[in-house]
Image (tube, rainbow, N blue to C red; front, side, top):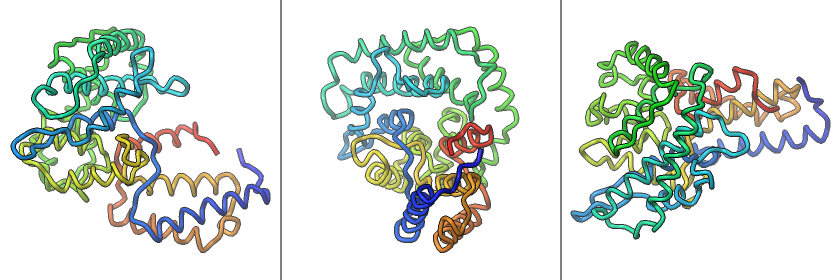
Length: 328
């Protein structure tokens, strides 16, 4: 449905586009993706050897996870949550709780919260309830058939099993997806199936993936980059530097929260501009100088990446827009 390009709307749209054009012209690529429980949980599980001792790399990320748990025991969005997202958020957060409880006596850091066992029990109960009623066959979400089984496996290593009615169908989807991969390609040339990297823990040799890093990250994903740092046998300073930059410059602003993608300006720019154009605005309405800057940025970036776009947030945004369920 087209919106009337009224004077009031035009002024707001012009300011929005002008601000984006200025940002793209004067600052390194960043993005404004909101903080993600999932990616924050994964980054909270990174420990680094410092002076012969293991230290949590982002202790505030664990604090963020701990403090953001809902009263029902999960980490779902109580208003607009997507069911499988809520499940993955809660699975990754539970992993963070379990890993901190298991390793805290070994890794230097703050004393664990006294109610961590209670929190873990609550989350396990939440997941049991949610998985029991989850309609796997009706789920249409990027890479869920890879991510949920991997998280189930990682939780199993801590002694937690989650049988549920939809599990056989989920594993069927998982096996079909895995059978389509040529894993040898992962070590030779950049391949989009490396997203999400955390789905391939125990399958790929992470030590052999260093050449796949781009600007210190895997597919602009803090979670995938965190998984690489956790499971590679040699510490990677470039990957740490990327995560430190996200920690400082992402929407968490140093509070511990990590976004689901960084940088994310390609998808955010294309989303904004295409939505405004579809709503009835023109380049003249929006300011041709500014739309030219945005268009030039997108052309340059997509050309250099050979038109590929990856990362959990980016792929979900594309999927959402293709389904026509997006706001104007």
